Length: 305
Image (cartoon, rainbow, N blue to C red; front, side, top):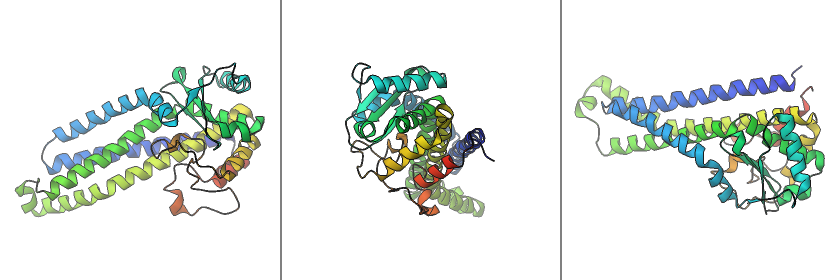
């Protein structure tokens, strides 16, 4: 029988397989562009630019996310119970206590951000504090602390930036091809023509593949945070009950954007509606930032503590 430990190990393996696939994809895109234009500098430029964008995004991500969410710091005097729960879970997880922020929004949700554990932030909405009981709140906060412990900000930043780079270089490649940027000897040779056709198809499909990988990584990290959070609380039903309540709530999070949706505990746009007996079609799943609620609850119920 699967345990929470085997669930966590499986999710870690799958995540790094997907991240490896993303790296291979971006190298392939830049290599195709450098080959087509007979300029190895394109490949090195792409790799260097990806590294710079990763570092910048990772370093400033917490400030950007908090500003976009309109989150405000909440002191221990203002909400001692929230601070107490977070502090106890952080001690259990062996993490420094993160800073605590509050988002004045009726939609129940939460997120974690910060470039490392020492600078981490956990933010909760007004709706989350009003709707959940203590065991459910502990489940959600343990999930968010698990994102910090699992270094998900680093993983997600890398994947998001690389996916953006794939889209940018593919667009540049298609524009240059359209306006006749290729050398004539490449187009005149039969082998060059075949390679160019393959490169063009790849340039069209690569951004789609990158987006699907990015979303798959996001879903895998959510499963991993669920499993890791249960390790802290030892009570899967608390997290499962929170998922049911949050998914049933009709409010959309007003400050959420497409750029930040993957950070939240549950889809802030209510795309997967309520948890129930229905199954989300696979074609819908692959375009979701979060696993369907019914899948997350099913995984929690199948865990053996």
